[in-house]
Image (cartoon, rainbow, N blue to C red; front, side, top):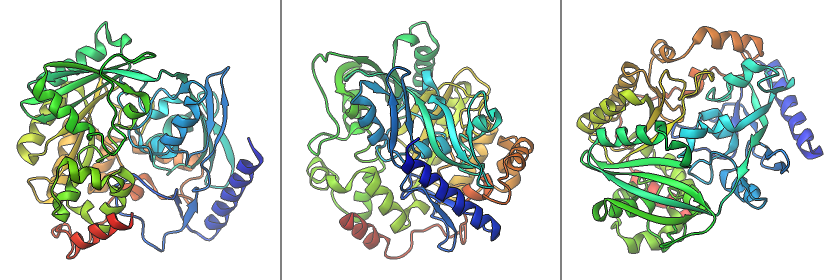
Amino acid sequence: MSTDHSRAVSDIASQLTALSRRGKRPRVYRGGSNSTRPAPHAETELVDLNGLNRVLAIDEDRCEALVEPNVSMERLVAATLERGYLPPVVMEFPGITVGGGVAGGAGESSSFTHGLFHRCVSEYEVVLGDGELVTASPTAHEPLYHALPGSCGSLGILTAARLRLRPAYPFVKLTYYRVGSFAEAVAQLSELCLGSGGGELDFVDAIMFSPERGVVMVGTSTAAPGSPVRRFRRARDEWFYLHAERVSRRHSRYTEYVPIRDYFFRYDRGAFWTGKQAFVVTGVPFNRATRFMLNAFLNTETLYTALHGSNLSYRYLVQDIYLPRQRAEEFLQWVSSRLKITPLWLWPVRPDERSLFSPACLSTDLVIDVGVWGVPALEFYQANREIEQRTLELAGRKMLYAHLYQPEEEFWRAYDRTRYLELRRRYRAEQAFPSLFEKVRTRYPDPLKTSVPAGAKEVFKSKLVRA
């Protein structure tokens, strides 16, 4: 470890020890967040990890990278790609950090093979509740190693992670297959990931634009591109989901070649399709010309800032629900008929039964995550509660970056509470950190009043302009 890193970690341990002696249970501050939950109250004590943003080492012989938790996906990809390597899983937004990916249980379209992002981590450096620094791995503090992912920082503070790497290729050969129903999409995802040909694929995900039309997208890494080559990160490029929808209307099967960085961050511009809501709220026409002119304001980082500043996170539903593949179609049909939200994002995930709080810790041969993002047909609070209850009924789990309104007893039905409390005691977290439920529950002043506050349109506009 570098001297700067050791000094920073020592400072964090000292902060934590001092706060603990004062009876304070701080939250971690990383300088930003991809969570849609409201920010903690201003009086909440914070431990600042914003400066832990360095790639400490890349070991080409061992195919590993040692990184601090506030390293973003964009910075991680740049540093490893320069050496000819990449992490097996790269989340879709450039600003998602290593620590955020571990704490929140994040993944992407390579997760059907490699699992969620934390499955790429061979060891964690963690500051415990009493300030002790430990290394958690499959051979040391193994219970902590398996419990950290998805625990949202409620067991310790992650200060470094050692990541496995794989050889990099500069392009992705991306093929779109049109599907005509939820059942067809789920069946095709299952066949691709569980069939004999799944080992030849690198990336798999899908978008359902309506109950009757969608695309399953399959990618393989390649050194030499064919034609056409398509990009998605420049202002003049089309948003990826709009391009995919056009492909679904024109072709039953279509192949193109995408530069690897454009592929990884293809959903950044427009934040999938949630950025369209900015046009709805501000009354700006939604077309290619306006998307080009406002491009600088329509990346995920800016849109998250505007979402929180305008309080639209209490109107626009953003949830990711992990389900056994056998229950995914039933859930999709329910979302379509009850919430009336489309498009829907689907991506398959390798099950993760050892990580207690991973959203992919489900009993199945393949997990399918469904991204449900949009304005629901129901009142906002009711829509969230129904989706939480439906998830439990279907033996699924939701990602905890989003609003959560469950009562505590209902929340713990999805997790091993007894085991969690044992880990909290063992690693001296009880008096040092808020519990998992305390960290992720959403406090809503009045669940029956979910309309956007007056002036939200003006606030949203000003946030976009300032950003």
